[in-house]
Length: 93
Image (tube, rainbow, N blue to C red; front, side):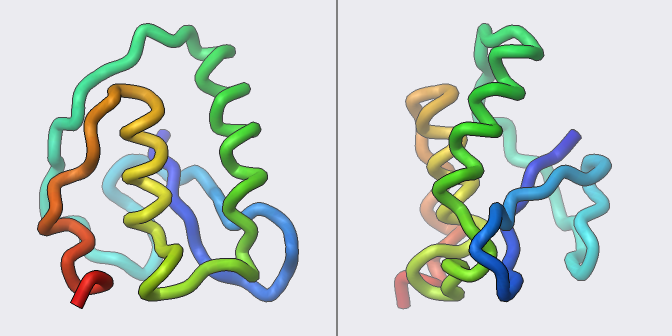
């Protein structure tokens, strides 16, 4: 599964899972290998459940807290590496 963060008007998690390369409303362009983790499936599910509490749909902000910020947080926590800078460069402009 693939995990994403999106906006909605409620103070509940905006994190959701979809089939890889099929996030609604977006066109898949390419995969970017970011590393791996030694977590078991159950550890990973627990990790995502805990992290998703920090990403409520009503806190989504296109510049300050978007889906790429979420992805960078996940990758940093799982692999110790950030996503490539070009991925979220529009938000930095």
